[in-house]
Length: 588
Image (cartoon, rainbow, N blue to C red; front, side, top):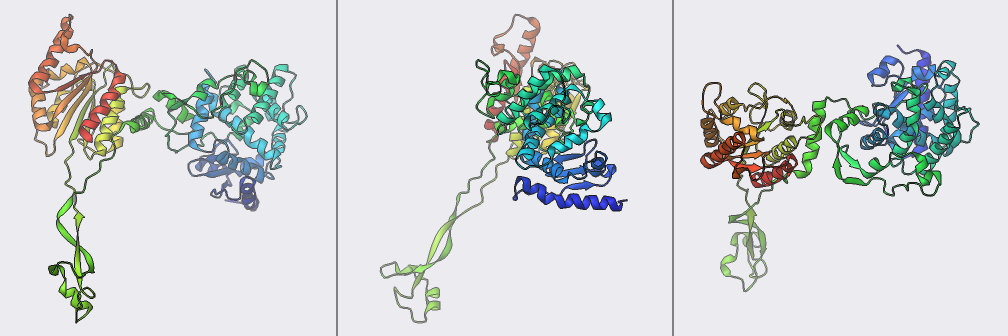
């Protein structure tokens, strides 16, 4: 229940919102802030531990007013609200930039990557607060003075926080220790100067210097022995970007940029900051891509989780392979519209003397004038040809079997080109209007399958991104049950595996021959079958190894007797090119 004091405080902060917006631009459009009168209300909004937060998903600001009052900051409504608006407008500004920022921070914090969200928050706060203090003349320094006056918190202050406050004192030309940056450490004094220089030099290009700032803080994090972000007192109250990207789309977080890899250097080695000759020059381009290099799924997952995107490893893998597959999909199909052989009347035009007499439309001419005057009141019909509806082609459905045995990578941890190839082919098939069934297998009992032939992307990718890692034994019963009856639509059978695929020709649990089941499946599928197998390209030339020769003999027999189209893929990476060619052959 809100008290009178709560109501007054909420009204005061609500009245400060337009002024906070005007600090950045009068054209800024953000929804009104959520001013919470209790910790419970703030928690329901996703805010816990910090006095305020931003949500990049819906461009919202949330404030925990009881915590604001506890810290003695009731009178700083404009400052705090303007700071939160700065996260929307300046840094990070968007979920994609938050992902990029955290990627740089993590690369510069080896073994301490879990501190990247906290370091990123300190970093972006420096740019925002420096602008608000110097250009907007807001009282940002007073907020830190208030925090420094809390003796309980001051006693817990760590080296990171001391350095951070000393950077502010350098930026704003304050007395040493005025904000809590007092230290007799000469190294810290030098690093504070470098930190302040970094903020000024890269004020218009803050993303590029993120790795440099994290590298500057790294030894202090090590010395402090901080286990979690909450141990950084009193900075924990200011960690307002902890869950900033929660619920946001994850597109664009896979690419590794050049400045990400090369930016994890100490500021003293950047001559734009230190002014020293012979130091590492700064990169000129703020966002140059790293030649197509992409992250592994587990790396993407760590970045997303650090951004507040709470997804399981499996859900992250689904997003990862969907995004990686998109550039390789076939174009959406277009249908030609042939002209109708029957002429269609389009209107009337004047009949003139010299035109064929039989072209006069006497009815329309007499409607214009009961006494027709040739060449004046006479008209004739105009005909054209109307585009007819194209004949729809029946797309070929896809029945895909993907190997997930121990010889295959786990797609949720490392890039699996079997999964990626399957995603490219399956999503291309969906674009063409086909239905897809996916079976992921390792052993007879290690099988997951979509519920029949479906057109649900998530269901398909959910199966493709699963993993077993067991022994290799093809689930013959799945192939048998799929083609127990003749299908209404043709289906192409695709196997993605290695030499273990020949287990499909063994006997099933009912004693049926796998050869017979495969032949029946091809017959009832009606659209042929393909095998993309991790084999040597000259596999059909034979092998001196008796066990491998038996496998090659089976594959040659499958190609000769049943018509399987067998593609040898020497490296799993080559499956991507196979997937592109296969998709264009069958779904364009």
